[in-house]
Image (spheres, one colour):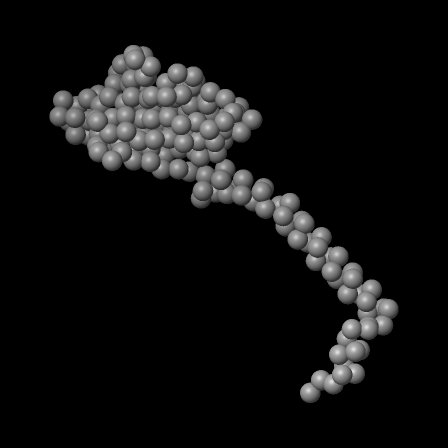
Length: 168
């Protein structure tokens, strides 16, 4: 059982022990600062190449699904994967609206569409295939500039929303 003398000895440590405790406290503070400094970089790594880096969106009605990068830099092209289905005639119209249609540079489009048209502020792509065929379209788009990009992709009455943070 501790006595009053034990408590007194803990409060009034010899000078050497106080120096060791102070050094340990400084090391602990420095390690917390280092952790706070590294945490944003770890989060950026998770968002850029890690599991949080890819976003998915699907339409509430219609067979439309998007996969896209949530975080990217202004000078890089962003992959955008779109899954859709042709109708009974074997046609599928894919419509890009918002900043994707107005100010974005499409650097790659695979497979090539049968027809491309720009109408009513929308970029429309026509794909032909077999009736009720599932298609996967891959685009590489360069964002319009730094900031939050909010765009819509439409197909067969369904709309999927794309949200990306573009860093300078």
